[in-house]
Length: 572
Image 1 (cartoon, one colour):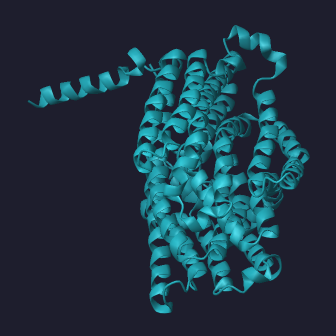
Image 2 (cartoon, one colour):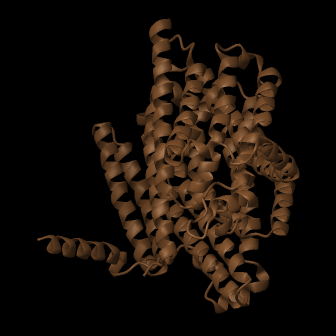
Image 3 (cartoon, rainbow, N blue to C red):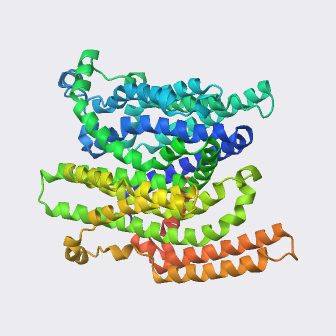
């Protein structure tokens, strides 16, 4: 049987996956329209440079605070702000009022000067002449910076939602925010096309900015409607809050320094593109990344967030328990966390093998049905081909970094930050070498893979140190358990050969209609894909490893049917 914590984590992941599916469908529909209405220059500016501006403000302002709050003991998350407030609100018969920790208000205070400085530096100095001469450029930059501050205003409520694992609130907030962003972007762009004429494209940047502001306002509105307006500001005086901000300056600088290294490594491709590539090439790269990252954002991002939350909660509970019990329970908790990590890695490696087996050969077949000839003539197809290899690396890195950032001590996090700094030259060195070798813009994707590989190597060594091999062997925890089994390896090998044979027999045959041949080729691949999944599920004994009941893990469905049957019988 699955444990309650595992069931809670599975429920959280499921809700986040459905949220990502909903948002990606809306974003996909919006992008299809934008690719037709907006120019490549405007699309590249918004998707690369404006997104980089927003992510820089948000990441540097809130990432360190989020990690600190997740690692805090559960009792800290429900604490009131000041001792005076506690004594005023807490009575023998009434519980204390739950409010966000005061630390969760720091991102907005820290982000305000950061947003102003980043917007001025970008619009005045960093953006090129071709970028600045676009219509409504400065207005769009101002709106993007203001939207980032509006989003930071919702940070206290978002943190409480995450700490309380109220995923339904977050799903509702982000789902409506994406819908608002899509609607606002399309309305402004379509209205501009109607006023300015078809193909004018003048309000494109303004439309993107309006969509970003609609996203931030919708997010803040849903959270405020759920928690109340009083949560927008801390429950202390302005003087006390100013003193708190000044006392946290050192903490903010430390957290921002660590976040800055990771942010530069994560967004290094956009930094290089925004600095060196023409706007049209930035647009082609953005199209490829938007399509290539669909799977990463729908599946991998919810899994990483759930793992980070699960590992952080487990670590916080272990630290709280440490003062009351012996260290034997700590070892048991550590083994449980590592077993969870191994199971997730096993899941990701096997599914990544299946994904690469089918995505790489089928992508060239499907791309002409997705991209218009205008975008097929750019570097987007080559970048998407590289993304098919990039997705598995993203999956493994996300899980391992979630583990390291959640369970590490302050000293270990410092060592991790220093390692990231030392490994930072890997990306530019690899990108430059591959550019010279003729890989084009796809060199950035392969360079990202090399950079993530260096980070994965550190995380693997930290999660499974060589010094504790014997103890892990005694507990049944070995890194080899995460590797795909023979059944799925054999199935994927046979499928790869069969796909190549089908492609040469069907797609290269001019005697039959091409669309009919493509359909037959896709159906054949689908059957092979199901076979590979079944071989992995049964061959690697995944039901037992994931704690599922019954044959092939169908016990959960069987139990659910029995409960529904009993409920209907009682009603009758």
